Image (tube, rainbow, N blue to C red; front, side):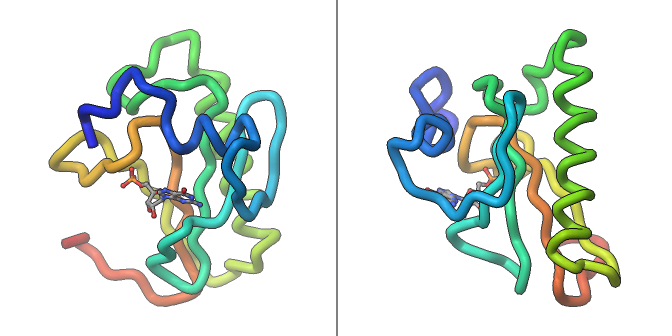
Length: 118
Ligand code: 5GP
């Protein structure tokens, strides 16, 4: 929730290996792991190592990291064999249904998605 902004997030704990996660990939800029509450047969998160609370807080200096995270997301989608497509989501803020205030990209796939989203 929004009151979590500024406190170390659950994702910071995963980054520091203080909390376990099913890690798919990690480098100096990001870490990717399976979502604990999957919304599709394949659902993983690409999380920035820099503790940026939300997309609204992204600065020009974060351009490379965000691009990199998208490249990692599509590489992992291929690795997870999401050959028929998948969805990339960034929830931003309350009405965007953001629950963890640490910037992350959702990759959801393995079933037919619907549009528009609910
Ligand atoms: P948001 O709603 O903020 O975009 O998404 C946060 C996501 O993080 C949710 O899909 C939720 O299931 C996932 N999540 C929350 N806590 C944990 C955790 O401790 N481990 C993992 N692997 N995923 C988590």
